[in-house]
Image 1 (cartoon, one colour):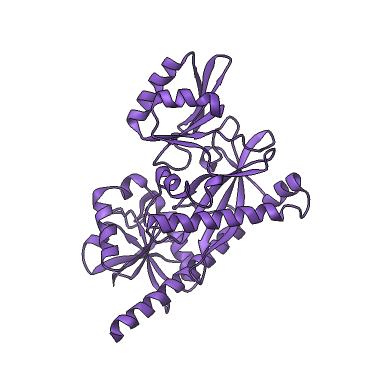
Image 2: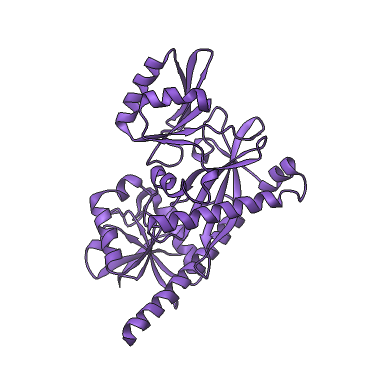
Length: 368
């Protein structure tokens, strides 16, 4: 197969039936989608990359069985290690750094922390879209801030899929706390600041947190929703808005993630309801411009190479205000088929761009 040879990096296991554990299906989907678009892609175990000049290049055949063949290490890698804990281990970090030191192209080099995202964007052109935020606050700071913000979200600096998020609100002299445990909503309360702070002290000892101004999101069917926005690089290596989906929070939930009960809503239906037929285009244009600007700034200040990002974007209809709630460098697949197909099209186009750029770089080196 002509074209770029690309290694999709994942966490490997010793099983030939599921060489990437519970992520094998999603890794196979990416590899197969790229190969259908002319990219010579294979899955690569991160542990295998430290073994030498030849690695196992895994593919799933038409029989649904995985097959591996020894191949030279490719020049382009797409990081799909879907475990923050494993990716941050010293051994994996050393291997990823080694690839970059060897001059390999590694895009979407790692998970993004909420602290890094906030610090990258807070003094940029998109800073007006950021909710007010306290990084690693003390319990006392959180308790003192609630009267100003009304509602506060506590979010782990390094987490995804809504894990570990709590919503705090004070009403009728009591603190109400809503969170998620084992994918189910939990609801409890504290009578005073002291007992709340004691609970937060234990929480903050386990993980580093930020406190974020609670945004009163627009509601549909009496449930809050947000936009899941996809931005990617195209065949010219430039950031572009792909599309947006809408995620409706599960009943009693504080987040809209589907693993926690979130549901899909078709954007056209929502846009027509909120803005009227054909009057929603300026709104989508603002989402597009904001998201592309945020991706550019984040990549520039991070210093790595990214090719695909998703943003969770909130909307306050009364204030007519958009908010950037999260940015994710390891997005899962979109449930909307037309968005996912376009995403794979752009991913293949971007990989060809990287391949051409690498070829030009090598030609310049050889001509010196």
